[in-house]
Length: 429
Image 1 (cartoon, rainbow, N blue to C red):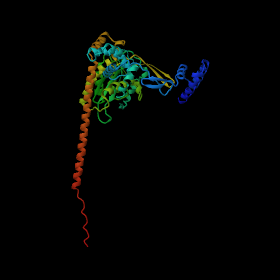
Image 2 (cartoon, rainbow, N blue to C red):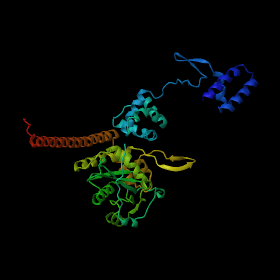
Image 3 (tube, rainbow, N blue to C red):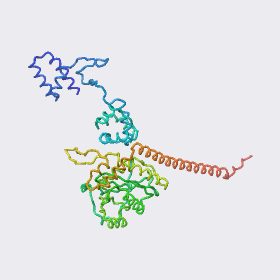
């Protein structure tokens, strides 16, 4: 760039004094040397060294080190940004593409429940804002927020050879009812003893997600939670796909699926992409809601299930998702194409095989929901969970302090009562 600036500076003086024919030759020479676009090169040579007034300062137009700023009136002012931030927070800080798709649907719902009050101009601006602009104006707020985890899957028994393998590329069901299941451990970084697990169930076609907390990963509790989730699903359960953990690969679940005519498949060992639909929900739904702390008491399990009862409504009715349509490799880059962001609720309404009574039941439930109230209730339960973790930490710290204090007292007492041999008498000679 330094050489290009030097060449442009030298040729600009010759360009201003040259004839029309000579200017064409100079332009060809500059383009050959620098690779600039012809129109850009003309502007660079004509404006080199010229001073214009921008605000109260003089600026050189042709100086590439100092680019002039475009002074346009701001379209999305502070009022629009404040309402955009509020809607973004209510919808759990989703990305710009998902937020732009859900704004026209969720704004009337929030207005109906008196959560927001927009004037006509602000409302029109919110409806017309693009995903790229949303990401740009919310970038400073997004940087304030960001977490990690581990895998606790243990291999199942030889029974897994009786269960067929299904890979990611084989998922082509357009009909709801084929789900992926997985467990999310809440060990808090300490994998010893029993701790709560969250059973995560995600429908492949609609991305409908259900969660349930169990006290540990014993197959009896996981099986009961799976049956409870099946009773809550708004569509019949047609197929289950799991990893190779022993909590899923067992005779009890296999017999149940055979009796209920449910397709039971599993992914390949050490291939998380085979369960990609539920794996992404492990973070976007479970981890974002309850974090990475340790939950190991029955009270915390009940609190988790209360939280999930609200989270299922919030996630499935008001959180738009994008599904991968195609993936194409171009050299070293992979180009991915996604469909229009839609909530799982909207995908279910448009899915084949959804009966009119089921569609009416979903619409009736949707009409009663207030996303802002659901978000407030979820936040309240999250605060209660954090308080239980903090109380556990305080009690553990207090117990450790008392133990160290008692050990110090015992050590002092032992030192004070310990007898030492007397010194030999001095020689008085």
